[in-house]
Length: 441
Ligand code: UGA
Image (cartoon, rainbow, N blue to C red; front, side, top):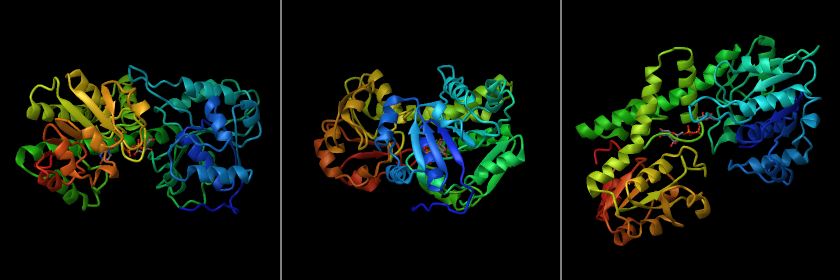
């Protein structure tokens, strides 16, 4: 992937509030397109790093693109709203929007960012919400802006659709550009910021743009829970879920993606966004059985491994289990809502001793995860003396392990493939018992 500075499009002055993975990736791509971008983050530690060219998100290529654009004078960083906001045409708000313990979206960071912007924004500028927000949030933003005096400030919603680990690629080559605003003219101006990218543009009202983001994540999550339900039936009737998904996927109406069965989805987006959507539905009195089932199936998948291990090892008290992979998916060190972490905690609660390894995670971080007693540098030392192994993240590093070496060092024989990623025959040749999810094993 190589970027090209866009010399023909209108060059705009843009402020981006939040230098997390959405804000930083958006800033870098917009500056690569030739716009003049100032990125604001109130986190001093992060800002100091960014000012010295260091990036704290693991996105391939981002450091190089950031340095190139900073050196060219198109990208700068600050923590000062007074410096970032007054002269810009667009303010992209990219702060995090977590859900609280009751699944209620916590919009405090968003509100603080809007207040910070409101004091300095110029007449005619546009605030663009990039953060994933519950439907209706853009209306709240209007309220928080309050009395803007004689200033006319427009609001747009332009959701991001980045996958962690390939966010730069997803931002630079978007599959679609969705922009919502009360005025079509405003939406088109926002879409135009990205105009040299070849992607269909969907222009909507504000609430619809917010819903497109939420519905997209909910649909991906639902595909995963659907295939996990089908995997359960495959196990019962002796069918192979991978082949079922392959056979289904050839139908373009279905497609191949997000049909990988296993221990379910995690991360900072799909689970959180689903809970937020459920909260919105409940607050409006709307019945959403499908979405509730998507969450319930995902929670059940996290327990399936525990059940399989108990079936083969009996009482898990004093058993020793090695978990291969802790991140919520390969290519990231992100542990947020990772099924592997939930598994480690459940195993520890059941009395098992848990060892773990992950190529992207330091022992210092892993040992902070409750339940993990030993962190190993690789799969071989994690498996040493274990009664059972669980593959929880489909890292390439685990694809071609020497299973004979592992079998020789284990106390037991069970290998549970929570991601349907390993080759059963190689594991069984080493004298181990392979168990996948819906793989007829
Ligand atoms: C997700 C969406 O894919 C992005 O489009 C969206 O922009 C992003 O959330 C967001 O809202 O910011 P991400 O959180 O990076 O991206 O995660 P995914 O790559 O979608 O994976 C989510 C989880 O589903 C992982 O735990 C993965 O292992 C699991 N998964 C994925 C499956 O279990 N089966 C599959 O077939 C695919």
